[in-house]
Amino acid sequence: MRIVSLAGGIGGARFLRGLKAAVPEARITVIGNTGDDITLFGLRVCPDLDTVMYTLGGGIDEDQGWGRAKESHVVKEELAAYGMQPQWFGLGDRDFATHIVRTQMLNAGYPLSAVTEALCDRWRPGVRLLPMTDDRAETHVVIEDDEGRRAIHFQEWWVRLRASVPALEIALVGAAEARPAPGVLDAVAEADLVILPPSNPVVSIGTILQIPGIREALSEKTVVGVSPIIGGAPVRGMADACLTAIGVETSAQAVLELYGAGLIDGWLVAEQDAGVRLDGVRVEARPLIMHDDEASADIARAAVTMAEELA
Amino acid sequence: MRIVSLAGGIGGARFLRGLKAAVPEARITVIGNTGDDITLFGLRVCPDLDTVMYTLGGGIDEDQGWGRAKESHVVKEELAAYGMQPQWFGLGDRDFATHIVRTQMLNAGYPLSAVTEALCDRWRPGVRLLPMTDDRAETHVVIEDDEGRRAIHFQEWWVRLRASVPALEIALVGAAEARPAPGVLDAVAEADLVILPPSNPVVSIGTILQIPGIREALSEKTVVGVSPIIGGAPVRGMADACLTAIGVETSAQAVLELYGAGLIDGWLVAEQDAGVRLDGVRVEARPLIMHDDEASADIARAAVTMAEELA
Image 1 (tube, rainbow over the protein chains, first blue to last red):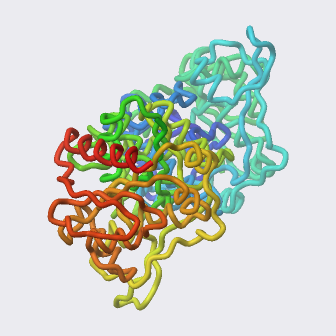
Image 2: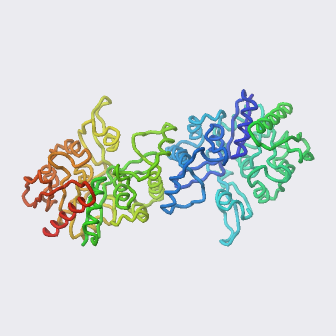
Image 3: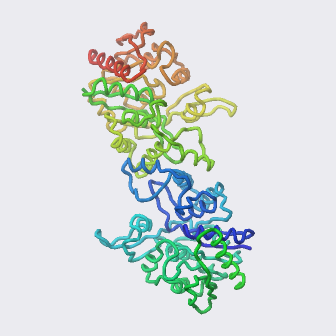
């Protein structure tokens, strides 16, 4: 069985660990969000790709959900001693090495997809991890505060401001010119089914869907999504702030409508959202909290089973 | 009093600490060797500038003589886990931060002299530290081994091979086109005296003297040098291997002749080398082992006194 899954960061990565456990025989290709990528201290950082890679490869800080286990922060402290900005982004020493390798390869001319494959040679995540694009497509957020109305990098809004200033607009700069990374459209074409994990529907899944050609390719497939919203609140993270920015209600119903019946064939919601309905979409209610690996695997298994039935 | 001093790495840096202590009122400009600089993992490393900066700024590993005190090596271990080469160059986590800052500034278009000034804003070494040049002038070493005759970077010969393979030739690639860094010739012109510490006469002092214009400018000044050779052996390091490569005997006499009476006005040698003579050069014998800061200061004071008398 060939499965394609899209993925953002923590939630997506944990779901994918469940998916691997649920269907160990499946060949899984993960299309990762790179809209959050940022260049810090001259080093290219890909938070979502790394979270997937570290989580599936056994290197993740399990408590935090991102970054490396047993991490130290000497480099970051030294950079601060030099007065380097920004200081609001958490980069550990082990993590720095990943960004140094990536940056050196990118500067040598390798595309991000090749770099990601090289990094995965070490981590062996058990899935094929592809960036959504090798091109620069960066999520920017328009805010308005004392300094006026301006666009800032997604990470500045998300990490530095903790999404406390309302996002007036969220835009994927460069989306129109970006092309899916090599392998993305082929993987979708060859997939038996597609699973959307409960990642952020705006800045993770929504970002990937903006790369020209990806949504169209997915629409040809049996796609089952897992709602990232339970009872009107995000399972984790600050998806509500993102949904509000694009004028969408924070509900399992609204996210399903955002994705649309043209894309989605099946939709898993939590039991309190059992009333969700959309023509052309089969909706199933079940426990959706990923409180441990077993729970994640159960949810993933339900998604796969539903997709197989729909296919 | 304005003093210009050239400097290589460990020996030069320790001598400079003595010089600062000997003449605390002096304004000292240090012209640092950059022929050993190397790009590792995409980061620009300037071993000699950093050794001077850390030593005078209180950040050096005193036992080792190079690198940062209280250093850890997480990044290096992680890079090795990714299979990154080379693994023979010792880069600590604290040190990495310096190279990250430097590389980011260089990539942003700042010349090395401006970058070095910015790094020194933190370290406050108490001297003005200038790279010999902002241009690329790299020391390469010609060796012949099982893989044939070939030129390798100085660091590969020095650090990886520990100078165990004879150097057939030592060349400063790019020297002819290099220009002294901004401030270098002005500092020399304004100097009351020039001191050459007991740095490597080939790959440290000799390298700096190869940058067009520097030797000529120094020749106009009163220059006192401290012999790096005591009784036929280097005070520290592997200067003998470098001297042999350029066909010069490892002796205080031969190094003086290498520098030449056109450059040198005064020459401090160890007591066992009291017989050294060269027309036009005043030679003085005294203890030259820098076994502690006080000894270094004594030697530096003797050099300054001699230069003042000769001026």
